[in-house]
Length: 413
Image 1 (spheres, rainbow, N blue to C red):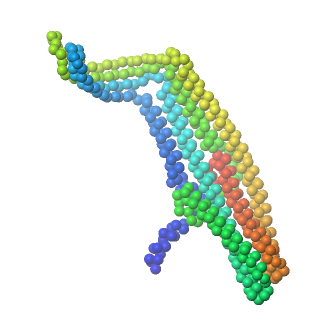
Image 2 (cartoon, rainbow, N blue to C red):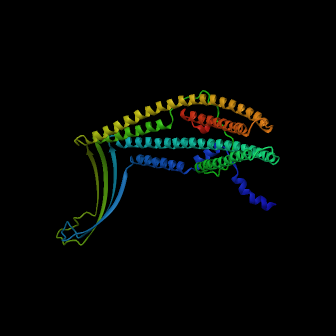
Image 3 (cartoon, rainbow, N blue to C red):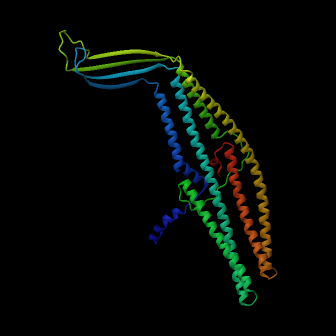
């Protein structure tokens, strides 16, 4: 008995139910595309750190070896030297500061892109989740219809054996029963496709789903979502890159100190006492430069970036207006689906009442199997439409929160 339980444990684990919040949470933690977005943000973070390091002095070391012929007093045959150079820019017109700010804005944009991708992934999971729930509801209605058809088929066959029903009556029911079986198989395939999508997006071995609903939207306020914020951060980065180019027209002041130590070989004979070749030297310098003329090259490059910034700001305003439009429409859509839900509920009640009445008459021989099959089919379709509308309403709520600039995940009950 213990061995049997141990063998069943993996199956029990695989059969674990997952709610919508579980699927989204795991997707945000393990989805490879989320990780790719995180790595891109990390790359931008390193670029920002590199821009900060540009303010520090630089220290370079190096060495040379040369051999020359012929030799002279001041030109030995072999020279080996090593050097160390410390260099620092005292003033660059604000170029490094502008580049550092630009990298900061690019990093902010990458974080916003990561958040935007996570929200879009949440919406895809929400849509796939409720698609699966619709298909499960449809499959349940189809199985119920199959049981009803099988029961009536068994009853008609008994009547046929007693000479109270014809083969035609049996054939019609069999045809409808087989068509229902095909619809069941087709729905099962669509259901498995939906589950596979959820497995891919969440990284979880999804087999069954818990019931998950969204809170009713009440007094939801609007705020711009990540797309417009990304455009703003990108525009700010472009503006700082323009400032960095502008700094090229300002004076550039650099200090540098180089220490060199040399060793000489293959020296030419000399009549002069002492060593006229220096074996070490320290050289300090300050350099000042300024661009006086480049035929407007840097000025036009800066102007091009400024136009790019204006274009991004214009697109940002359009995206905000577009989001506001979708926010208003999503609220109207909620109202429309609420009305549709009431209608679908009334339709379901009517279809169920009609089916119960027709079923009694059919079993009493007062109506033919065509009327019975129509009533049964109408009931199945009404159940499917009602469930579909219920789940459409949940998806509509998530979209309303999304266009309000919120994270739909935070509103899952």
